[in-house]
Length: 451
Image (tube, rainbow, N blue to C red; front, side, top):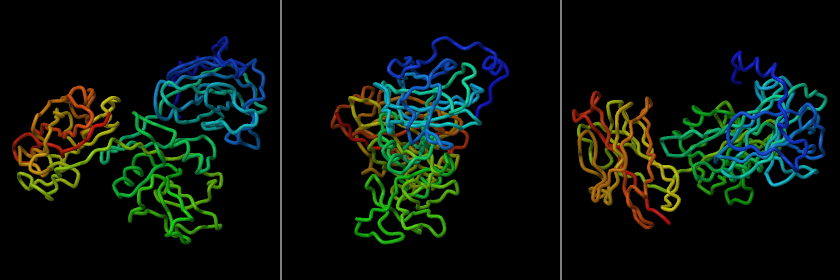
């Protein structure tokens, strides 16, 4: 929980209730848009019949939200959004979100997320949003708690984290209340980020698992389940498949003794805070309130590895598979991409990792993969790309050795639908240079563009 400054705390505790901040009727909600801090005043609000029977809102033996006011929020982003009253009101708040376009069903079943107590008696929810779409926000009190004074709530995007090793983005969504596997799967598939479609997390490599555990370890659903119709199905460990259809690899970080099909109904899989997998029943026994979403990058092919499998690096300075030749940091630079290969959408972003911190790198494009995609020695690395070379953009690496392009790649590179282009980063390594040249290159990346 973020702490309020003394001045802001004084404002929250002493300011008079604002006027007309939130509608008492869900059919005429107050319109708000974008991310920021918004005022609300439910001190005179009544309790409507809508939003009182949502399963997601069930907490402490009740689903009700009393003294509720309504907002219709227009999203300015793709991805998961957080709505919270944490540290912004002394009241016992309760928040729910629904699709926009009208009041929620009185019978329930339409809430995207709901929460009572996330931070003391205040609330926080998270749900996937689409840029330009509208969502209905219900803000009130836990039944029996008084609406003592006006307050504020914050709407802010929860940006996924980029794994430079594979170009995928990952996020953990805090639903705010217990959520079953099917609902989590549906919501993950409905989410998007930077034009990339989301799905529940799939993991088949040790490096990917290490990244998840090290970056956003929480308890939540992943995209693994037991298909009882699969030819390999048997209990307790046969027939587990990914929602994406990709094969289940040899790497399977089950906790000791798992999967065990406990209680005879454990067909769905969670990642626990212990960093391993556990099979559990569909409901999660009411203990799972979050899920992991993965956003895959563009369709691209890594080539010209500096790992010694093809052309040798200039001074035996081999990197690892998927990298360029090793630089002064001991690792090779990696080039990946996010976004799509659509010329029309033009959302492709080239990303570099394991570069030399604070040093410039040239992102460039070519028509050919040099030496049958194996590359030729050049400086401290391998030149992988040539023929019709286009300088796309110079970018400085940050303190962690990461950078990414900000230009329109198809427009800058003169790319048309159907073209296949190759990309590489040529970057400076003036102080820790491996072979004395003062510069190095990443691996190569090949992308075929669509309309």
